[in-house]
Structure formats: C-alpha cells, structure tokens
Image (cartoon, rainbow, N blue to C red):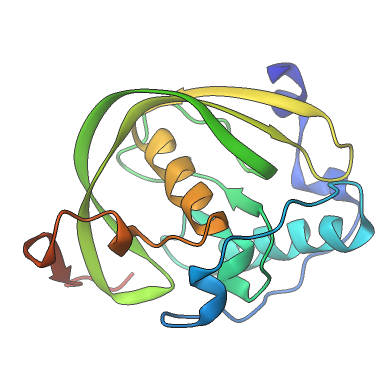
Length: 183
C-alpha cells in the first residue's frame, strides 16, 4: 500500500491549485466533523490542489485541512520536510478519509495552528502512528507508518477533519500560551 504514496506528487492531480483564505476559530466549520469524500470526485481533486497551494504560501505551515479553508470534508495536505523537528518524512502529500489505526509512544509537545493564530498549546500525541487513507485523484488506498513530528502533524490534521482543534486536546488553560514568534 505505501508504494502509492512514495510515487504520489501534487502534480499528479492534473490541476493547478488556488490559494484560499484560511478561516480562524471560532468558525463553525472548524468544530464540525467533516464528511467522508469520494477521492476521485473532480471537486475533491481541485480541493487537494488548493490545499497544497495554500499550504506552500504560508510561512512555517506543515499541514492544512479542508475545514481550515471553509470546506467541511476529510481532506488534508501535509509536508514536514522543512521543519527542524522532522525525523521521518514522506514529502508532500494529500490524504482523504484518513484514520489512525495504530498509535504508540505518547508524549507531550507544543503545537500551533493557522486557524488559531495567536495561541500555542501543549498536546499529548502519539510519537508513532499508522494511518490508513486514500489518495485524491486515484483513490488508491495507502497505509502510512511514521513517527516523531510527522506523526504529530498527521494527528493534528486528522483532528481538523474530525472537527477538533489542538485546543480541544490541551490538559487545561495552564497548557495554552500566547504565540511569541510569527513566521
């Protein structure tokens, strides 16, 4: 299953993405579980390209989910290759209907989000995950095994697709901080 992800590139979508505005909390779409999608639907293929384009123009952005651009579906783009905390990376990819099927090595870490621009928070996440999903365009099923920062980013984006923000995962107000650095 993983071979499809290794061969996947945003250019395979066959459409140019458009940069979309990012919505911020408390927008309702951010707290509403997204619908599953048909990854071969042309509208979903275009959305996948739009997510990649929007992610690429935002400094420091490593992931972007459809609800963050106002679309209540289970699609997100991810690319942690340039992040200093990255150990394992699968490059730039978009997943549809993603589910964590295994999770282990839980530990806290600081997270931020484009949809919550003024805050960061300490969130306990799995340091190793197995995710099953489908690729936009082809509908190929993939099983992604990853760890460290990429695992954290995947869980963060899957949460967006489920209507959750990192603020829903912090232990309490003591684990939320004003963002100090704007990239």
